[in-house]
Image 1 (spheres, each protein chain N blue to C red):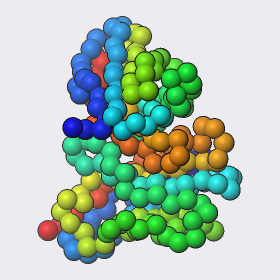
Image 2: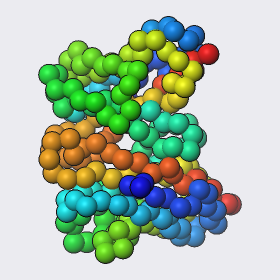
Image 3: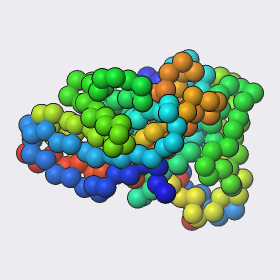
Image 4: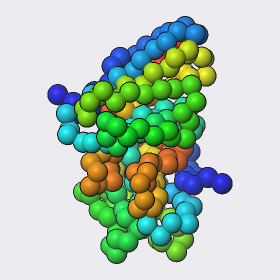
Length: 112
Length: 117
């Protein structure tokens, strides 16, 4: 089984809808991250969490919110989706004692 | 200014040959780290190699090595003996500083490597 899982893997939604992307990990890492990837722009950090009570905004947090329900779960919400939020979304995890981040398989979100 | 620059949008290499993917970075921190990730067409991001700014030797992981030139602020990835399965997008990324929040990664725009049989 994958160490970092994301659900759903693909989602098409309409403008104005609320949508939640979920991330779960079995790696035992305390740090979790949400990134989005747009063609030609690489990955950009949306939010990150160092533990359940420590959540921080990243480079592009506007229009997004997150919830860290447990050490192993980190959800990303789009309260009112808009077309320019169409992207590939990645969850990642890391240990507090190491720098490497390990990524989930990604969620491809399309907002029409 | 971009913090991570990958100047090669696309590269071709013959199978079994070595290839170097370029990455230059910009930071004023003394403590930082450089990463390389591979993204195959299936989409997942695979961690390849890490180099810390205080590491005296270049990092190596199997066929991957990182050519770290601190004065030039470059962290090029060298893949030896290329295989067809190496065809993918490759991203260079950087973390800056030791302070809280330094585990955020800044990514370059990537280089698409194609291995020719």
